[in-house]
Image 1: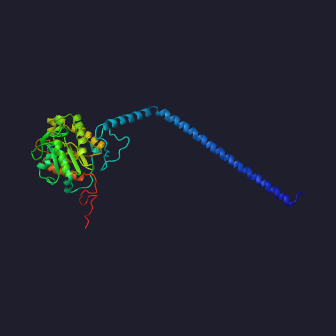
Image 2 (image 1 turned 90 degrees about the horizontal axis):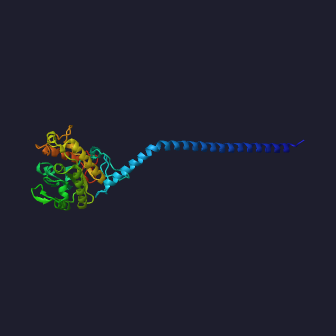
Amino acid sequence: MSSYSEFRAQTRRRRRKKNFRRAMVLIVTALVLCALAWVITWIIGRVSGDEDSSSGGSSAPASSQSQAASGSQTEETNSGEGTDAQPAGWNVVGPIPKTIDDTLVSPDYRMIALPENGRVDTSYFANTLFIGDSVSQGWWVYENPIQNVATFCAYKSAGPNSVVTNAQLTDINGNSVLLQDDIAAKLAEKQPEHIYILFGANSLKNLTPENFIAYYEKMLDWLVTVCRPDAQIYIQSLTPVTAEYEASDARYSQANLYSINNSLAQMAYNRGLYFIDLTEALAGDDGYTVVEYAAADGIHLQAAGYRAWLDYLSEHTAYSPTNPYLEGSPYYKEPQA
């Protein structure tokens, strides 16, 4: 007969063996479950991969072609001179960093135009230069708050081609000047922080839309070499015309102006410049110049038009901490006592 001590020892041994067997069962079960999970995951991955490759047979090449086409367009757009600058987004107040694929296809100039961004007082224009044709000469002809504040390089019958070729035309004072020489002299003298450009009233009569844009590009290539490096350059849209003027000259149809404005906006975007939509300031709901703004010839403006134009420019400037914002504007700062 076994002693009580031997019985206790046998009991402990049986208990250890039983616990060992339980542990082994748990370990084996865990390993089996892990292996099963891996197999299921592998099968799902294979099935998904097959489905992607079968459905991607048509979509992948299309995507590649799209990227190739986009890359080609980017290459064509940036192959011109002076296109190294960074582009600006349509709903921001300044240029944004260039991305790999940022070329616009069939842009709408209204989506690229600089949005409303507070309001500045007229002292802002003391550091501003306007470059343009007879439409821009109106700033000097009609009484307005910036008539004797801003600097004007505006010439009768001028276009971007006139600047590129250094043509001899008449300035706001009636003097005959060489355009490039005159603009370069004003830039050197005034060192303006803001430069507003407007051409088109005369150009569409003498140039095809394609040549107009090509000369505009060349003009900008030259301009950036003579203005201060941190100058803010604003490309303004073509101004609208009256319905009567459109009827007399199809080159100034709303459809044609819309197409050219799209090209100007894309040019501004690609170069990192600002685009101003003057149709929003000067045209009525029908797309033609507001009657009160239009001059008798249907293409130029009268005094009320320049006041509306000035109001619009005052509310559509790129943000700068040095801008003299009016009280009530989001960036207004009270003068220091």
